[in-house]
Length: 145
Image 1 (cartoon, rainbow, N blue to C red):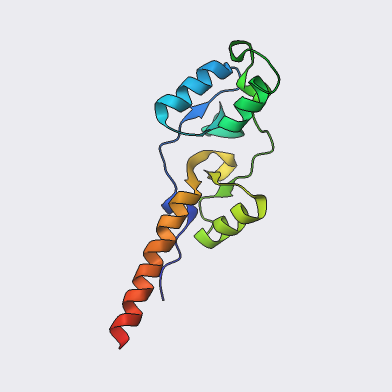
Image 2 (spheres, rainbow, N blue to C red; image 1 turned 120 degrees about the vertical axis):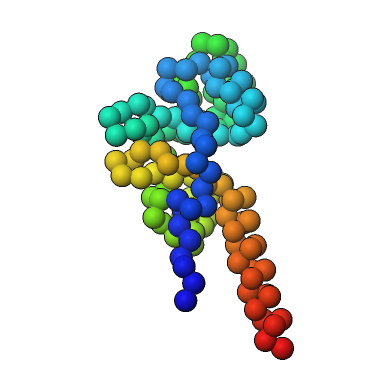
C-alpha cells in the first residue's frame, strides 16, 4: 500500500508574505521581485505567522486600476481577500485538489496548528505530483506485460 501524500509534503515552504499595513505599491514590487502572483497576508503572533488574508495580482488591479486610485495610498489590508481558503498540512493531496476545484482557486495557503502559515500549494505543484504518480502507474502497467 502506498503512502498518502499530504499538503505539507508537497507545498512550497518558502512563502512571500505581506502585512496589512504595507502599501499596495510595495506589495506589487515584492510580487515582481519574487516572481509570484499571490502574497499570503500574515500577522505576527505568539505561535508564528498567522494567515489573515491573501493578496493576488488581480486584487491589485481591481483596487487600483478599476477604481482609479493610487497604489501608494492603498494598504494591503484594504485590497486583500479576507475570506481565505486554507488547507491543513496533514490534508491529503486529493483533499487539496478537491478543495481547489470546489472553490475555483489555484493557490492555497497551508497551515499548521492555530492557523500558522506552513507553506503554499499551487495547482502547478499538485499537477507535478499527480504526473509523477501517473508515470509510476504507467510504468507498473507496462512491466506487467
